[in-house]
Image (cartoon, rainbow, N blue to C red; front, side, top):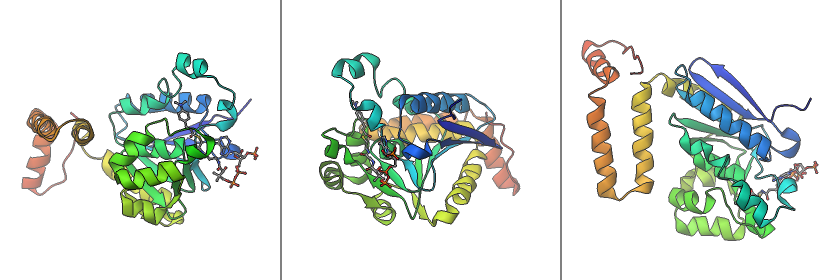
Length: 258
Ligand code: DAK
């Protein structure tokens, strides 16, 4: 029996998904993306989970879409099957915080997968590129849209048009990643962060994620209005009252995630 293309484990309120095609540097084929989408939706729907981590191996987060599979596809194949849309975009439905822990290559679709996560923790070995131009393709899983929003047009054009690889330090400086840590500390730092986040009130986390994402999708006026309504809605939350009273009582809050 072939090995599962992903592995999922739970640590308390954190769900960890490991991409598991080491011989192909975690190249993202349909089986993997279907399994990833299903695991993300399972964890998102599990009330005992507050944060999700996606990680790869020491050598590769993911080296992109599986070129071996795509090489002979036709336009009709990808159009009719909804390639990318039907499984790669599942991550957009996830309402809980998703953290990418990236070591080694994050190329093409692998870089795009990291960009679709909410927080990216990079090991010093991490390398980010959108090299599709070398294949006469284009970054088609959100790369041409999310990368300029993350790092600005000039640097995004440089990466997309030249296939330039960024090391972790550059990716950090450009704002593609949230933090850089030594390789040996990648998993512990990520887990510490995920455990911290998953301990906060889940509906508050979800409201923050929705609001920050609005910054990319709405005008400033609309975004501010969305944020204001999200803040008003916090006053309907037991956790918000508990959080504020716990502060005043100088004790740790006990959140019900309601
Ligand atoms: N797909 C399939 N296999 C891959 C792969 C990939 N993306 N990347 C690596 N592998 C395989 C290699 O073929 C090799 O397999 P064997 O020869 O051992 O059987 C094995 O993984 C180890 O790779 P290397 O021997 O090449 O390892 P190195 O350390 O020498 O080099 C590398 C690592 C990451 C620099 C190199 O493997 C590389 O350049 N890989 C390709 C990276 C790349 O071009 N990625 C972008 C893929 S294209 C679309 C939407 C989106 C997309 C396409 C269409 N539409 C809406 C239509 C997205 C496209 C992409 O992501």
